Length: 595
Ligand code: AGP
Image (tube, rainbow, N blue to C red):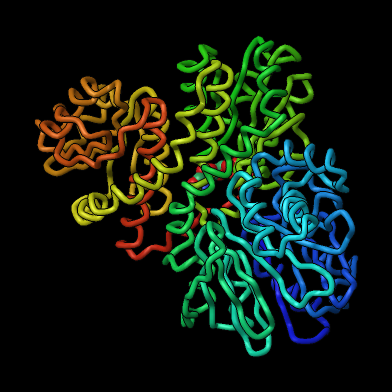
């Protein structure tokens, strides 16, 4: 997800160790490249490359870097492959300005063409460089920094924040639009960063920027201006009293809760990326010519494969075979070859079950593509092309934001393959945010009654079937209760015998499956069970279910995806109420590299 940090001091000094430590404290966001720049008088020192902070810092001796101002950046590749040229910070054409960004500039390709046509020197394909040239464009027309950044803001589309400085000046400038940005005020220095962990070791006095605000940093003070009209903004600093461990959790009690709340943001970033990805077309072209298409994964990632297969059938009329990775080898490997396509899905990109299936498939000549969150993981290195999930680190063992971004990736591919209007997908981040805000109370109310049970079921149908399986996995994983996910219609074929007074059964209701779900609900309630529906506001659900957790009413295919959010929250609340740590459930590991 990238991270930026900038510092302004009174005099030239050794800034390297501060920059390395700041970068290290931002690594939790996920990255593949790192860089640092210092500015002193008329000199800029820039050192950067792909790789880990420790390795790049050692190789380029970043610790020795001196300056009156410094910038460091961790890059998580979106535009342009991880490389030295695409690492940040970036210089302007003349090499007298330097800057770095985080976020996505979605019109990067068009802007680069403009900059080149205007005679600027463009050295990379990375969108962070576009932030520098967009500012340079107006500085070269004689504007001051505030006005230049205000004009650049009009040119740079997307969600981002960037920090920039120039030789023969004593200040840094930064702007926030959609990505996080916090200012620190210390004794004889000021700093700015994507997040607090890199600031708090230096100072506890901070100012949080809002979207559309520009900050000018001197060593002794900062000034905020509105990007709209350039007017001065007054904001008193606040003093942070939280411990670092809670700051890293963004103020949330657990990483899982933080990661659930990050879903709208990472969904938005992913959609920007997919719209600009060349690999999407590469994969779709190959699928278009394929004999059989397989979606292959384990655990949560397998549930995403199941959902993806439903999306492909419904939205693009393309049949796909979703399969658990270890079953791929005995069941399908004898049948596949160069005519077939597999998309191997894994958050970590290191799950041995998935990699074993992938190695077997590659040996047959099958076209193997990937979907992963961890850049540089084995899966990303041995597939022909892969799509990044752009979630940053997912620290909590239960997958949450990577699951929703896996679903969004499959939805996007299905929309593209089916030639559908993707405008409705752009509503997803807001709908996810609305869901998080809307379901909280209903989930909270249910926890005491449901939590007395150690057996429950989570049922779904059609698009909501994979969501029900995922909800059941979340409940099992962190509450240690037995929760079975199942097709709702199968419940009457056996498990119905488990229902007694108050027995909880969750019904994840797809908008086009209400009558069927209502039948299932009544089979449970007439035997004394508690039927908890998760679905859109619907009189039939209100009248028949014991409880209804209402999700917003979006277009049909998107609805199922939203329904996983209350299930994630219910699992989280139940685990916490039971006194368990949802981030590190017993017996489980985030990455399973064993058989
Ligand atoms: C999800 O909450 C689990 N931690 C687990 O099922 C996980 O999805 C599975 O182990 C696969 O991991 P991967 O996506 O990294 O391959």
